[in-house]
Structures are given as structure tokens and as C-alpha cells.
Image (cartoon, rainbow, N blue to C red; front, side):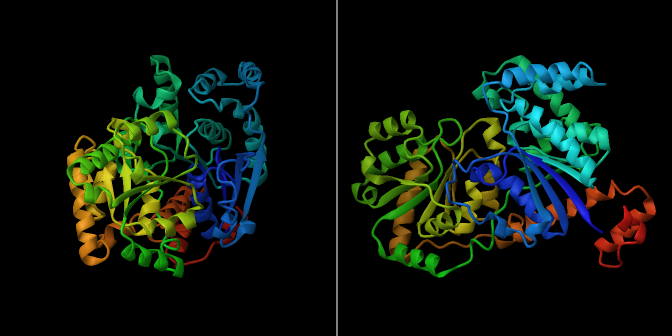
Length: 475
């Protein structure tokens, strides 16, 4: 049977690596599982990653099953005029009043609706998808999914990101939080959560928080689908082995960090203060530790990170490096002695798993996690035995850990690292994440098969006990 998926996302390659990862993973899984995938996304110049991800299409076993339909972005000077025109259009549409409320949400990309709604309706008429899936943290794709589910009565999967799950003011810090914004957010959440066939979240904590908002809904429709790490990227190759050999020979103990430091989300204060304390305590150990940071823009966050480094006089032990393509970054991080992840203390940040953590898993190095006890990051680090977890307010313990690691590396040549493989398997793309996505896509497709007997045939095929009947082929 020819399975057809319509995927609507604001981010799809070429684009910022972090942003497009989710949609790319879903499309890759579907194509490799035998689906025909049509993606609707805005035109996206490769303005963040440069040439860092030119071979993304190679992830697909059958790239001919993937078709990407680009629309005008909608981020332009006439966006307010477009929004007014869309409001006027809704005045003449049945149910437009309710839909208008859903379009007035805190999403600066709302004007994209003007371009994507006609394209999505036209494409759905043409391909008759078995499943519609919307993903991306902007709310616009999910509004489009809501419209398609009403018109075509297709199963609709909503892949929510972390900004959806916590219904409080914190997630609107970039948009001047107000009760009105939170009211709009709840309205959209309520409609989507009840209409969707499945609702995906990125961590168990966020899944539970989302499901708790809908006590009248089947709890099984709310799922945890993590990002995961790529086993292929973590395979030992000649370059990685060379990096590891360098680790044992050099005098510096290198603590690697990928990404930016942001005051509330990824604070640098704990590690900077810990380096200062190590300097005051033992100059010899301090002169052995080096924090190496790979970031898209070394000058980003200048007003925050550089004054902090100068205040504690640790400039000589911190290196800022330009970002690397993901595969090169993984092998480079594999040459570090240990890796750093730091997380904020707000309720929202404690529920999330940062994307860099999965890059770290592929690099296979010990992790120093500076995060609150009970946070999603802390739970994963402890369960998988990836390294110590230390609260942000305890720089002395961070300094003790660094000192102990330097001693251990001097004695053994490198730090011992024996993570719990059974736990990590759940976060592997090949063994855990992609099989789960494929299973849930196929389950959602059953909803589009109109007769129960065909659904039984579908389950037989899933279990390898039959073939698609003629009626199902025609459908």
C-alpha cells in the first residue's frame, strides 16, 4: 500500500541545524519506512549553517519519495496588511470567528498563514494524505493542521515543542508576558489537544504536563518522542580515534561546550565562578583546566559572558571557537576530556532536554551537568551514568569535580566512562526514536482506513502475517 504523509513545518533543511532537526527526523523515518512524504515549508536560505549540512538528503534511503513544497516566507514589511486581509477572509468563513481567535497568538510568523493555507488545501486535495503531521515551535503549522483536519477528516499528529507545554508567563519572556498572551495560548492548546489524533512532546515531563491539561482525553494519545542521537555519527573512526589519542598526551584538561551561554537558559555563571574558585584554591590545577566553547557566533551574548569572564579573571583558561558541522563537531567533542551542559533553574528549563545533550551522547565522553536535581537533564544523566550532576548554586562542588577529574586523568591517561547502554538505547535514533515514530505514524494511518476489516488487515501486515488487500490498495 502506498502510504502518504503530509508534513507541515516552518523549519526544514537547509536551515538552522537545531530548528530543522525535528522535522527532518520525522521525514527521514517516514520515507525509510515506505511512506511518500510531502513537506510544506517556507523558502529557507541556509543563513545559519552555511555549508555545514549539504548532504542531509543522504539520510533518506529513497529520496525520490520526498517532495518539498516551498512557500513565500511571510516575514516581510506587508505582514500587518496580510493579517488584516486574512481576518477579513475569516469573516466570510463558517467557523471563522473561532479560527480568528486561534490566529491571534504570540507568533511573529502568523502572516505565513496567508501563504501556507491555500497551498496546504490544494496539496491535500491532490495527494489525499493518510496522515497530516505538523511540527515546529511556531504555532502556525498547527493552525494549518487544524484546518486540514476539519476539511479532510484525516488523522492529525501534532508534534509540540517545549514552548507549548508550560502554561505560564516564562515562555513569553521574549514577547513581554501578559495575561492576554497566556489566554490565547491556552485557547490554541485546548483546540489542538482535543482535535489531534496524537500529541507528541519532547520529554516525559513535558508529556505529563501537556496530558494533565486534558483530563477528558485518552492519555495514550499523548506521547514522548525525544530527539535522540545518531549511532552512525558516534561510530569510532580514524579521526575520532586520533582525537582520543591526543587527549591522553596533552597537559590541558579540556572541558568542551557546544552552543551559546544565555543567562536564564544556559547560564555560564556556575562554571566561571568554579574556575575562579579553583584558581584561588590551587593555581596548579587551575592552569591545567581549559574550557573550550564552539558557538555559531563567538561575539553572541557579549554583554553577558565577557564581563563575567573579566570579573572573575579567568580569560586565560577559556577559548571561543567557531561552530563546526555536526559530524565534525561530534568527532571534535570526542577529543575532549569531558563535556559541559548547563541548564537554568526555571520550571520551563527543568522540563526540557537540550539538543546539544544528544550531540554529546554521540561523542561518548563524560558529561558534567550543572542543573537542578529532578530536572529532565539530571534524570537522564543519572539514569544513564553519564557523569555528575551539580546544582547551579554550588560552584565549590563543580571545582571539586574538575580537580578530581584532572587527578584521575593524570593517573589513568583518560577518564573512565561506562554509561548504561540499556538506557541510552531508548535515545538512539536507530534503535529507539525512529522505530517509535514509524510505529505511531502507522497507527495513525489506521484511522484513515474506513472499514474495520481493513484495519485488521493493516495490523496483519504490521506483524508480517499478510499483504495489503485490493480494496486497501485502491484506497
